[in-house]
Length: 620
Image (cartoon, rainbow, N blue to C red; front, top):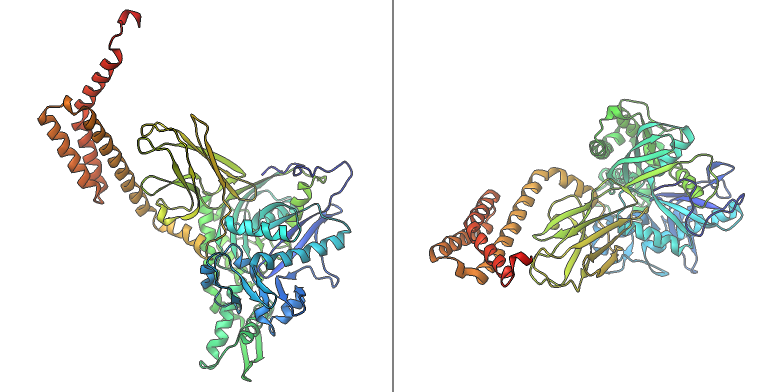
């Protein structure tokens, strides 16, 4: 995405006019808003000087809405009407709720979108998130003293299309003009690159409240290029809280009854203990449950490391995959940027430092660095003057493609392609007279449709009836700077066109994206073999239909013996195509091709003779 003193359409700044723009880090646990003031990006604070706003919304009795610290305080006494971690629910369906089974909310039964039942009626995650964004917008307008021209909102690099669209919908509901959605690791790199004038290849290790991302970026003078991205959208600081919470339960009476209020209380204690252990060697957890039972435990730093060591290890596998995707080793990395409040945990810093064998870059506040980077980009997008020209090249994290005959996936935009991007590929019909083609848009790294995620389907109609393979259907994929996809299909001879914006109302579950990548690596050999098998079966069917059509038209050209040889080859290929041995199918395809060579030559001679019938060769 080229960002060189440019502005969005209609937002070009007049000379000497400074437009108000903000960057928002919409977080799972906390959210922040930043802006460029007097040439420097700064996080905007509330009246008490607090930059972070807890991402918690409470729906009160008198139709009021509380956001932030007041809502977080009420979570222990009013958990059903106080929503936290709404970011984890954005773009999800009700069927995905197994990933949020620990949340003390009442959900409305719905086959599509998620609705949380509150005293003010059902509320969607988009509505909850919009309240957080509205609070940040109000803070910014009060602090900056004017109306905002636009905002850049950050999202995890592994947010899919549904999650990104849900984020934009929440911003629209809050009255914000979204200049761009920006991947969180990329935002952090912007802040570090501009503030520190860093150059080289860097890793951005971003562990937030609900997600983990890693990006490999090449920073050079004026250019920020994302080489690869990876991560785990189901891993974050919340999971470290859950580990402590489960330890508390394990230490208490197994028959104890935990209410929703107790659960909120203990999760709050767990979070506080995690934060205390960042500086202390132990933390005391004391609480009285709703039934009068008392909790009085001491968690040592060493025990906390043991409880969560597996979570830290889970972050290093995506780091290794990102390096591999970028064709780099950890020795090629000049610096490691630490982002997200969860990276304050000592054992995380120790493990990451040991992995890369170098000191970490954490001189900027890990909680604020994403918002600062977003503010820098927002400032440029509204057309404000910048002291530096710079270019940002981001990437799409998963491959995008369509279904082809035989249940195969043809990738049109490979993963880690620089965005915004547009790519086109030509396809054709499989059957004679085919007048419509269903375009099935898919996302994922596997070779078969069944192993990838379906994004959307639409149909291109009114294709001129032609013989199989004659039509030319151009399918174009466009991914904008926000990572949102649109797809079009056009028949080239008539210009008939059909298109769709991929805005699904559903999303992947928390582990799906990570599982896609893990499965693609674990099954790469099997996938290649499965694709070869399907391709051979498609080729076999195409050849069988072509030969049968030829026999129906010109069987009189053959002797009975010649016809019998071809029929036997047809039967042999038909039987082989029902099996799963690719080599056998290919051998039978070759055998049928050889058996029909002479027949094909006779048919060609007949067609030439028909074409030349009545023609004078001297007049040609």
